[in-house]
Length: 147
Image 1 (cartoon, one colour):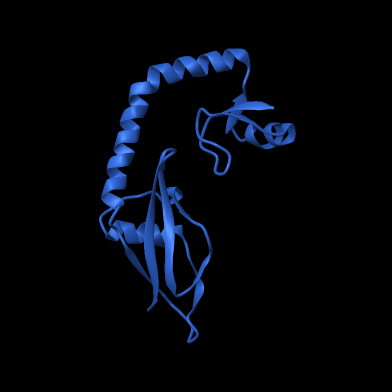
Image 2: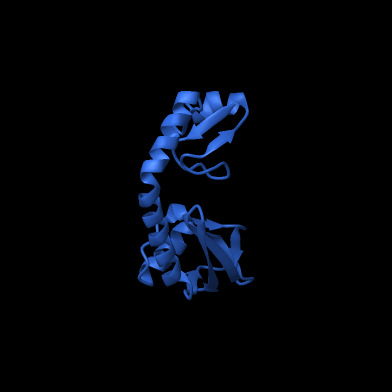
């Protein structure tokens, strides 16, 4: 089943992408949630026209994302967490704490744009990815230390 995404869907695609998914996933989840529409010939023509008209706006959005990425390049974060005597964290460090640490460093990044590959449950060095645009992503190293 071919669909046009209305909004970004993690691990599937970005807004205005034409994707191929199984019928049940499209009919039972993506379309009712308002995340996609069926890719009919008329919908594809409308999409092409909209993309043509928005081309310069998209270039500006990408340039803005690259500017933010340039400011985030040298940033290294230190996040304090309560730990046991063995170095295991009570709970875990997630994207909310990284967004707060970036806020303290002077960068206002939405927590939904921050992704951590593995669960952070011990003291040590890790890396988070900030996806500012579908073509612009920044790796931010962070260290988890005991409070």
